Length: 140
Image (cartoon, rainbow, N blue to C red):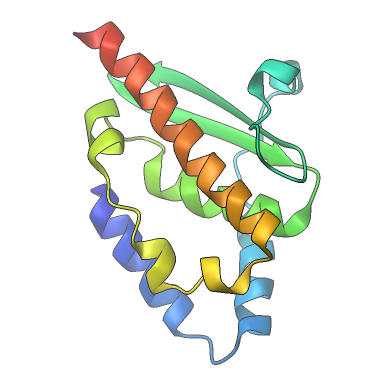
């Protein structure tokens, strides 16, 4: 699936819920299904700067596609990174770099987060795209 198709799927899933309490519960469930980062990658180098809670992300190239794993010490944040990893993991670096992230606004996520969590969300997106830029540079 393309990033756009995955994002549409996420928007549709969030659209099934009537209120934000249900959406938060769904995000928590997504966080529980997150492909967990290996403990050896839970280092300061892999912590996303700008997040109030700790979020670790590790990226590896596998057949010209980036595979992300992550973890967080906060359940909502873990759900947020799970959504992003679902959209971007297993994709080519260039597709991640070029990806539109307006699906975040479509599901209403930013407006339902505290300002510090919203800043953390922006930092997570920026870090995933930075990994993609680094790997794209290696491919060129």
